[in-house]
Image (cartoon, rainbow over all chains, first blue to last red; front, side, top):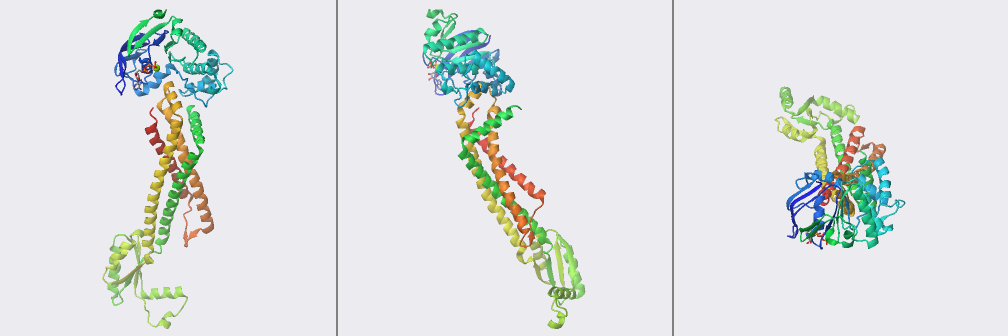
Length: 227
Length: 290
Ligand SMILES: Nc1ncnc2c1ncn2[C@@H]1O[C@H](COP(=O)(O)OP(=O)(O)OP(=O)(O)O)[C@@H](O)[C@H]1O
Ligand SMILES: [Mg+2]
């Protein structure tokens, strides 16, 4: 098992109970949608995966290691095994497409030669060949998210975590991004994606976990509930 | 190792992004180090003056004329026994007269003024010139000595002056150092603020705490060291031209020994770097929640 949640609850300091006794397992190589109404706790669950938030109660294991008991100085290693894609892309505006992707490798201390080799490869894979020297402001939303995905994949993570990666994109562009994510999943990377977009999920025939008011209220291996 | 180039590049980029603040910070460090340097050079030179005065600053004790030669000798023994006294030399009234005649370029002075007016004297040297005033008071109390003279207050004045320099420059330096540290901390805080998005990303990508902190420490180090370097350059230019133009101040030589002066310059640069690092430390601790 890659990811295991055991009776995880999260109560924010302001008293909001964002997750309530959540238990779930995700295997290597799976593609999982997290769905549920606004405020259900999807983002909270996702932030727990890379220890941006700590559970109030319960245990989380990633690759059989407890990340709740994890020491501060072990967190960078955990995060290097994950790639994170954001709804608002979070690209650095003053860096080019190439530099944005290279940045992810630089900050984990990759060799310059590895960076030179890998960045063009990634950009080709996400379909941005020829856009290396563009700045994010010169790209469409879909293209910007491709940069975000390339950056997330830069350090060859086991898991790709995406919180509403298509939230800022139109339907067609969203479908293209989904194709890219399926492709990445086919190559062996586990993908966890929170989304509101039912039409995307309906056609995917992937596992869907439904959250409501912080509880898991449904878990469908092939997304059959939407059919 | 290969990260070092990255850290310097990031630090440099950040410094050039906010030029005005960089300039203000470097200037403050520069002024602070400059004043520290002037104070240090003054102190070192004052110490040097003391050494040169040492030979002049002997205590002269005047012996009562009514004493018998054996009583005069006894006083000499008593003087030698006082701790802190290095040398005691007896100068008889005849020798004193001879010296005076030589000094004034007049022979047969005695004929002009009649009887030799001078008393027997003891010329006393202290092992530490700073002890001179204290020793003089002690010697004055000895029976048979009616007067004590030494350096006409020069010693005390010089000590007063150096102490005064030390106190005032200390106060000014502490104030300026606080100002410099504060400005450096502000510069770093702004740098952290303007890079907050980047820092957040770096954390999520898995950069270590120190990888994130290093560029800021280098930035602070550059600010402090640059300010100190400018200050040392100004100081060295001014001091060297002082040495080559005057060589002496009030007939006392300036300290020009390269090893002493260079040590001061190196120390000053170190102080600048330290200010930079302390300023960074404050901001990184307060504002860089990694
Ligand atoms: N940092 C926080 N501090 C306090 N409360 C928070 C914090 N983050 C989220 N919450 C609260 O926790 C609950 C769950 O929020 P969360 O962001 O996980 O929901 P979500 O399912 O991602 O919603 P959405 O679909 O709108 O993104 C909400 O009530 C929210 O207000
Ligand atoms: Mg959310």
